[in-house]
Length: 293
Image (cartoon, rainbow, N blue to C red):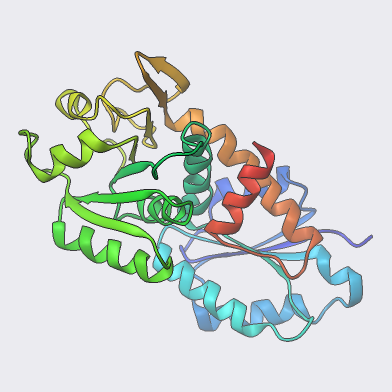
């Protein structure tokens, strides 16, 4: 059995140490780290992986695409996918800024408590135009939830909702200004009052749902805060919360979701080393998360 070689394509000047350590812990024998990768620069690096091994040995070479610029990483991912042909391809994991694994883990936690019959559950994703928020919204929409994306800019929220709706036929999405009034009948107050789920996916240290917001969302069954840096993105949640009951609500913090995120990440790396045709984006990572619980 040849050694497992992971080609790490990072769009940042310095490849992520976090992603490298996880790769080693997940069983990569050799890690080839490349920083500052662009779509054009990725092609010869991918060719180097494609043409050095053949047959079943090809599955022992895989690619991880990361970096803090999600749009740049997705451009690299598209070029990588276009570089393959026929059976000559490598397993690929796409997870810039950990956005895909984090979103998948958050949705796994949410769906654990929102199943059953009846009308579709309603979700509000605050910070819904950011890398993680967009993916949370997209994954929830694919699972049939009615999703409202909150952003400081109503225009951006509505544009993101339209973009996701184009990707998910039949999805029910809308945008709302997350800094709006919480007076009864105001748009933000109305969507929070109707929500079964609220997910805060904003920037580190940004409070997206304060005490007044929590009161407005009192009927929500699940609250998830993906911010690990104080202050909490949702008032009253601590990072280690993992399904902690607070009255009728269940609370999840970043570390409470993080355990599932790491399981998904490791399982995904195992998948791309066993299936050379695997191309794992957010939807595939959610499926992995649901399979491992």
